[in-house]
Length: 159
Image 1 (tube, one colour):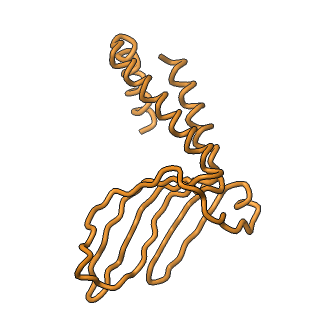
Image 2 (cartoon, one colour):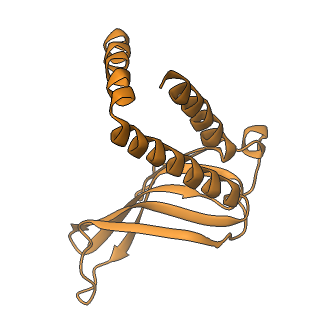
């Protein structure tokens, strides 16, 4: 499979070299992605931002509210995962079958307690198997910027 991906990538690069409008569009999108990632990563030390999806499941007389998120936490980490909570069924509140959710650059709340060395450097693993399950994996805010920088250098050198 790796050979197939490498082969397809090698075949598509000459097409990008010869198709200037497409290349400019892709270049612009990649640079924009890098700038947004950098902004969110820098702001993740002081502000909270998130993007995700919410949806509700009706179960007898209660509603299970599930949410999936990418969170720039406000304490320097990026968390990816899901959470859920139970709430009473309310006839005045419709179920959210599919709801896009986001927040941007809100002041950070009290930072999470950093109990281990890994938490202090930005890595997190949070899970719960209770009746309202959740799972969050966290990485330092600077790591996506570093990885994206390396990928962009490789991309712009090959084109």
